[in-house]
Image (cartoon, rainbow, N blue to C red):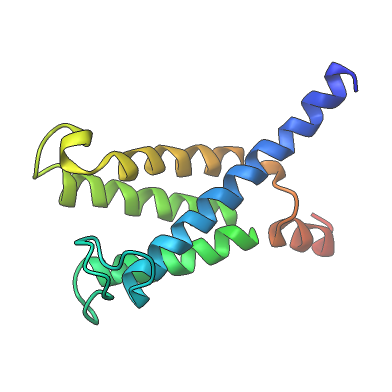
Length: 141
């Protein structure tokens, strides 16, 4: 494979892979909060967050929904921007008051994923294996 063809392949493989990984991880985070799967709530209790508990239960709802949409590749840019905003909120309002340093306040995940979602929103031009791509082909756009 020549360098130009490899570059063209990487142009869609990397954003598609990032979208799938971010979407699945976000979905799993949501199921953790809503259903108590995996280790349960952020406190590690193994139980779901109490219904309507602010902000954790609501974060779980958004993580679940945005995770499904990102994994499916539907409204990828909008979902990535919303997920970035959610992660920024998590960092600045939940983690930063505990301690300024991300490794001390438990906010490294939120900070990293905030920037990852922003990068995904910018790189989402050519994410193959997505419903956005199917929609674009159907409408001729």
